[in-house]
Image (tube, rainbow over all chains, first blue to last red):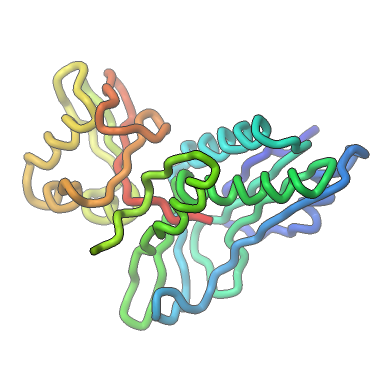
Amino acid sequence: MNAPRVVVQTADFDLGAEVAALRSGDAGVGAVAAFIGTVRDRNDGLGVSAMELEHYPGMTERAIEAMIDEAQRRFEIRAARVIHRVGLLQPQNQIMMVAVTSAHRGQAFLACEFLMDYLKTQAPFWKKEQTPEGARWVDARSSDDAAIARWGIEAGNAAPEAP
Amino acid sequence: MKLTVRYFASIREALGASEVVELAEGSSVGAVSDALIARGGVHASALARGKALRSALNQVLCDEAALVGEGAELAFFPPVTGG
C-alpha cells in the first residue's frame, strides 16, 4: 500500500523515515534528492518570532498532485512525496519537504528543484509572520517567479517590483 | 446563478472566509470581481484593481476571462508564499 504523494498536516515530519518509505521495495532507485524548508528567525529586515501558515484545503493537494504529474512527465523519476505543514510554527521548525527517487542523481536533483520552484509560485499557501512591529503577511518574491520561468512556466504570482 | 466566493490570507481577514454571490449566468471571473468591488467599502479596497490578486475557479488557478457556472467555487487570494 502506497503512502499518499501529497500530505498537508500540522504535525512535524521525519525526512529519514519518509525517504525510507519512498524507496522501500524499489531496487531500481539509485538516487534520492530531498529538500527541506525551515522557518528563519529573520525576514526582510525584521526578527520573526513565529509563523502562521494558511492553505486552501483541497486545492492545495490537487495543485501539488498536478505538479508531481508534471515532474513525472518531464523527468525520469520513480517516486515523489511532498509534505507541507500548516498552522503555527516557530523559528527552526521544519515547514515542508520534497523527496524524489530516481535511477541516477541528475534527474532526481532536477525534479526536486522543479517541484520546489513550482510549489513556491503555484501552491495555495500563505505565510504570516510575527515580528516586533506586529504581524505581517509575507510578500511573494519575483525571484521565485524567475526560478519557475527557467522551466518554461510563467508563474504570474509575485506583484511587479515597485520602480 | 449562485456561486460561492472564498477568500484566503489577507483578503479573508478583510472580507471573511466565504460568501454566496448571485450574478448573471455566464459571468466571467473579472465580472464577479467587478460586482464585488462595486459594493464599495471593504470589498472595494480588498479586491481593488491593480492589487496583486490571484483567483482559482473550482480549485484550479484561473484568469479573469474564465467563465463562472452555477454552483461554482471561486476564490480570490494574494500571491502564494508556501515552501
